[in-house]
Image (cartoon, rainbow over all chains, first blue to last red; front, top):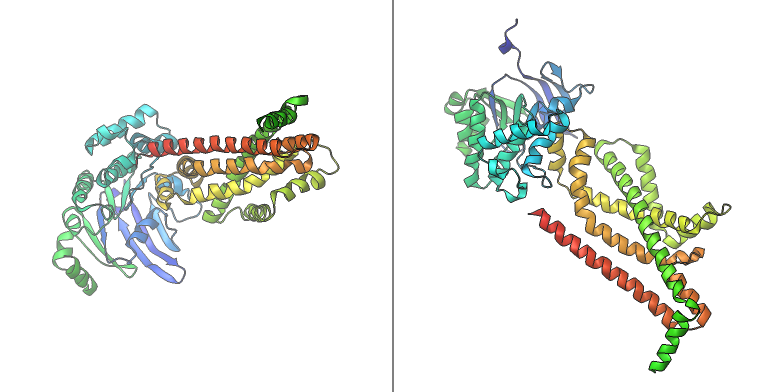
Length: 248
Length: 231
């Protein structure tokens, strides 16, 4: 038996993304281990979201490779749909399916893609809904819910697929301030259960409190990485110092 | 005056059972509209789908080219001309059923317009819906059929019903290939009785009543859709 800890869950090698002439990601190399809660911070336009969206190829990388579960998912021969089932994603705009009830939102993917029975899928969905405190909204429609509730449902929708990693793309940026807390709370609980998470966020408090590693991305590359205490207390990179000076 | 009206009415509609021209014509018009809409639905949906796949994935280049050619030609020429070309040129040497030809012509014509309606419907769905579907592991095709299309369809139902109304009126040129639809029926009466007023006004009124009924139906559907939307 090799030590499980030594092989990262996601291994990003030299990841590049160009939009035309614009280099958004300039050869990023980073390992994400099982149980890591990685917070990615950086100024807008730094490539944070693009980095995250490349991890499940919602944005197609133009170079480098991403090894997930031992498979290079950038290889065109890889069935990306199969791997995406193991990578939950939560969007800034929630993106729930407005024409389906909450329950249908939560069960359509497990039932269609993992051949779960209706009972099984709904049972698990109810279990998760209970934990985010929205069990009584199962038969409502997404647009009847507040933003914070919708985002909690979106997290549950991703979790219903029992993913190995959760990707969060600025999950609280589109929320009214009073609703940010309830979403962060759910994410915090998830982190405490050792879910592997990659979170692009502007919530410095969350990064400081919950992250196991914080990374600073600017100009298409990671300029600094550290455990949160050290990261916020003793930033070394000048650009990071400047950035933290503005946001803290 | 009233006596004159009564006489005219009798002459144009009652004597020799001339109202049959209108009744039978109405049936032909309805049949024509119904099947042409169905054919158009099939064509329109398929074209919208092909063009959307092409726009998003770059695949289906040849099919997309054919679709664009079809849209350009059909939307760039009058429906009467298309109808006559199909009847006199394409089926010139084979005598096939006139009604069938007309259904084909109007269906092909309507398909081009319905394709654009579907396309705008698909484009009205936010990008995030496709991304959410794909991120869960659905293929492009699955996301299209399970998530995008149902929402797009719902959005375009009122516009599609308006297309039905347009088509209903457009079929009035079916007389060009001597198909006895409602308009032609009225025209036949006119040629028999040498009075234009009664039959033509009657034809116009019948179209108007049908359009009003359809419009009321559209409003009803719109209201119901909005209610279900719960936004």
